[in-house]
Amino acid sequence: MERGTRGEAAVRVDAAPEALYDLVTDVTRMGEWSPENVGGRWLDGAVGPGVGARFRGRNRRGVMRWTNTCRVTEAERGRVFTFVAPDVLGRPNTRWSYRFEPSGTGTEVTESFEMLRAMPGYVELFERIVIGVPDRRADLQRNLRTSLDRIKVTAEDR
Image 1 (cartoon, rainbow, N blue to C red):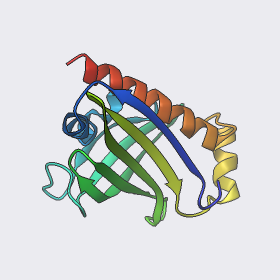
Image 2: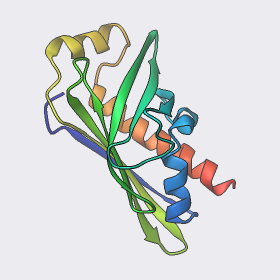
Image 3: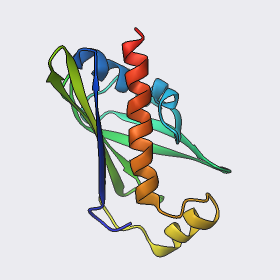
Image 4: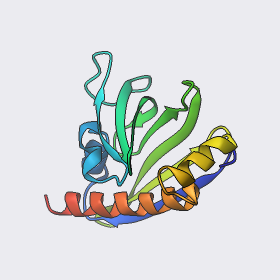
């Protein structure tokens, strides 16, 4: 994917922005919603989100397993949670963001990603052949929708 590639999805959830923020920022639970992430844990003594806090996310796709040490860049309860995942060399690679906007008696939740650097061609080839993803951008876009739909179900079942 090229630098600047973006994707976004949104869903209206019958829950307060603060409740949704608390749900999404519990990185230990992300595996409940994401088709690719299987969970995470806060690092360096952090117990929750704050600008500069780090967490290690565990991911799975087909036979592939990997971890990312992510850094929180925005954390405003009930409004926004943003973090950056690194590439294999530890450089900022993908920005992930959740935005929470009051909507009637609920909240419009928007999840997005942005590529901060271009992926080398060999990475895209690897993804196509080894993990069976012919179009990573389209795959991530589907994952956004799936994650949000699952978050909605969890939040509304409370």
